[in-house]
Length: 289
Image 1 (cartoon, helix red, strand yellow):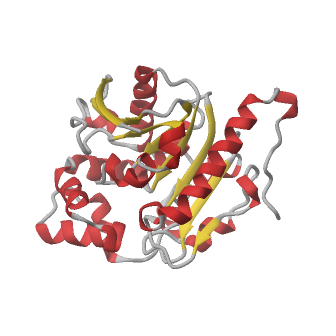
Image 2 (spheres, rainbow, N blue to C red):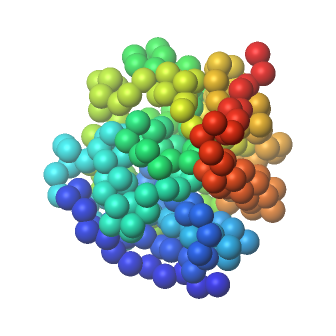
């Protein structure tokens, strides 16, 4: 199994992607704020990458992608979703399972009404929140370090602090370099856009999802309110539960791939089977009351 990197031209930015040689149903991985596609190395190099076409994408202003050509257009959750739709079109992907971590999960939620070929969505470290500061605060832990998510210019100390809260012990030199590389406007403008209510009501999107929604979090996530995420009334929650992985933090897929990858693999297999079914035979996964 090999992983090939290439660039995809979009109207938002030049988008860097890493793609495995697997030929099975496509799986699209979207990273978090100030990170990069390499955070998914254990999925790209795992069993799923051997069997499926797994594609990890650098958001505009992140990783090896270029900065946004027009920051005001791109650096928001809806803007990132638009960029991802163009990237998928450039890759010739019209059906896929989408997997989003942290900011990437919010982008995945924004893609729901745009991507007719979305077979299923898995989110990690992503609280689906409604509009307004109070509603947004419910989804997150009250930690001062979270304010770094919207800070434009990082000091070396900020890089260390953000790496620690987002990736914990997994924050290696490569992930710290990704934080240093990130366009500061990508953080500040996205944060401002969210507070201004320019993203969708993502709680409503998640609770009324038209596709199966898988939710996986670490029990010790220092950023998101796992209890809040588990309290929502999902109508299409995969396997009827939010998965909470004991002892793990904000990056469960990086911390414990032997625990996470089988869940992801099962989800992808299930979604592929559902796509292959006649519409009348597809089941809905309804969360327990």
